Amino acid sequence: MFDFSADTGLSKPERYRQLAGAAEALVSGEQDSVANMANVAALMWEFIPQLNWAGFYRVLGEELVLGPFVGRPACIRIPMGKGVCGTAASEGTTQLVEDVHAFPGHIACDSASRSELVVPVLRDGKVCAVIDLDSPDLARFDAEDAAGVELLAARLAGTI
Image 1 (tube, one colour):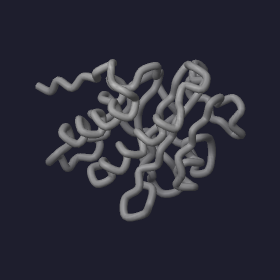
Image 2 (cartoon, rainbow, N blue to C red; image 1 turned 45 degrees about the horizontal axis):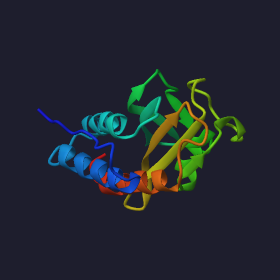
Image 3 (cartoon, rainbow, N blue to C red; image 1 turned 45 degrees about the vertical axis):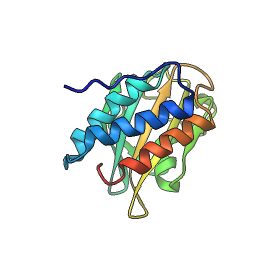
């Protein structure tokens, strides 16, 4: 039985360091990438407040395919370069979007989402997946969130 819980009194950077450490401990020794993504999606849901979706899209060929997540049903396939996730994957860069309705070509999987943070996961210099976080709040994510999820992505790159 695992009992990972977030300390709400911590600074945002420290909370993300704890999330990354918990994720590493949870996936340590497990080779199944889907199982690892599922557990990390659940951890993100527990550690990061004000979310309505947390999970992964995996790079398969020239598109992203839905991976493990927590939240409402989501789009299954996203073309590379389309929407926030496809842009993050094709450019290999973090996308911090304060208002998804202002993002050109935004793909609305959940009409309740108002802001989004998408971080590419790089393995051997190539994007293998993206971590996608959605919030019903405008401007929910900031540079500290981006840095924290980038840390998580870097630490998980070999396990997903």
